[in-house]
Structure formats: C-alpha cells, structure tokens
Length: 227
Ligand code: ATP
Image (cartoon, rainbow, N blue to C red; front, side, top):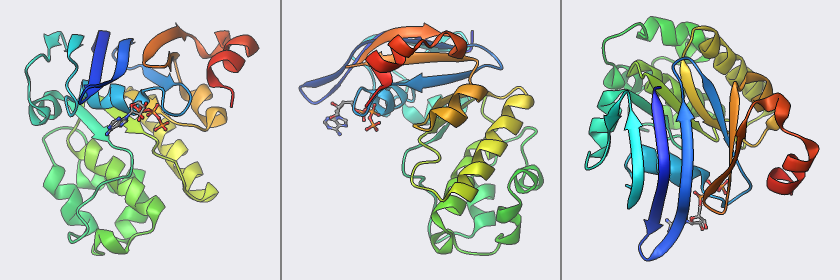
C-alpha cells in the first residue's frame, strides 16, 4: 500500500475539522476523495502533507509513519501536491518554474511539455501572465517534475474554461494510463468517476463510504454528495 490514512483527527486551533478520516491509495491507483463543501477534503490533504499535521491517528506513506515529519520531508518522500488555488512563482518563467521543482526521474522538462504543449509554447513567459488554466497546468507540471510516487490534485479544474478542463482531464487520464498513483478531489463527477478506481467519501470530517465508482448508488449520492 502506498498511502494509508487511519483515523486522523485534525484541528484549526481549537476547532476540530477531522474526526476520523480513513483513506488508502495503492500503487498505481486513482482514488477520488469526495464529499460536499466544507466536509474536510482539503483538510485531509493538508493533513497527509503535514501542512496541518493531525493530532490523532496515523498517516503512513510507502510504509513509513509520517508522524513528526516536516512538510518538505513528506514532499521529498514522494508526495507531489497540487494545492487548491494553483501556486506557482509569478516572477519566474514557465521553464524556470518547472526546472526549479525538478528531481531525478522519468518526468523531465521535455516530458512535461509533451503532456502540456501549451506550456512548451509559453516556456519563456512569466507565470503571472498565464491564464488560470495554464497556471493550473504549470502547477501540475511542477508537481510532476518532482517525480512524485503519489500525485495529489485538489480541485485542479475548478473555475476553468471547459476547453482547458477537457485538456486537464485528458492529461489526468494519460497519467493514470502510465500507472501514476493519484489522489484527486474534484467537483465534476462526470469526469472524475470514469477515471477513479475507487472513491472515498467524507462527511463532517469522517469517512463514511469507500468503494468502487460503480457501487455509488443513487441513495449514497443523495445522502453524501447531493446539493
Ligand atoms: P471545499 O470543497 O469547500 O473546499 P472541503 O471538503 O475541502 O471543502 P475543508 O476546506 O477541509 O473542506 O474544511 C473542513 C472544515 O474545516 C470546514 O468546517 C471549514 O470551515 C474548516 N476550516 C477549513 N480551513 C480552516 C481554517 N483555516 N481555519 C478554521 N477552520 C477551517
């Protein structure tokens, strides 16, 4: 098992956000983390990456307990996070953003540019001048340049034009084809479910369902995902 999250509890100051989240991602698996707004998806991701370390429970990655570890060490172990709100260095060019993230492995500048031809076309442009969709591609490209064992995408297609969303989903499917392990949060179920091997649903900071996309019944959708 690549990632194993067991009964984590996470707080913002005195306010508890997670009350027992369980989640696992196997090697080569794409897992969709689902739940309504404010149920704790981003907090779960931040807990895994130790940006908001959990106060109880355990996170194991590649067989190692992450307890006590700093966030940069988790990244170095192979967790590549594309955070909500796509953070790139605005005053660096596309190429500089990518190269700054590089670590040895199969993902190189050339391969990222092959996955996202728009980035190749804009190689010398400052990141601040890219469209929102291009910045999102750059954020994914940066995470890939670290050659992560696990790629985590938090709302990677939110607020983007349909044509760009289409391109990003195509790249996610291509990554899955290559065997990239991915944990993905996204609101567009029509795109998310076909790519997911498994779904984990959280409700009010707790895991309430885990299973195959085809087993997501109407009842479960209404109860946990409906608006
Ligand atoms: P969304 O889909 O809206 O992004 P989410 O499922 O990712 O939602 P979280 O952002 O993880 O949910 O929020 C879980 C809970 O933690 C919510 O009740 C939220 O109000 C609370 N929370 C999130 N960030 C903070 C913060 N910085 N300080 C205090 N409470 C927070």
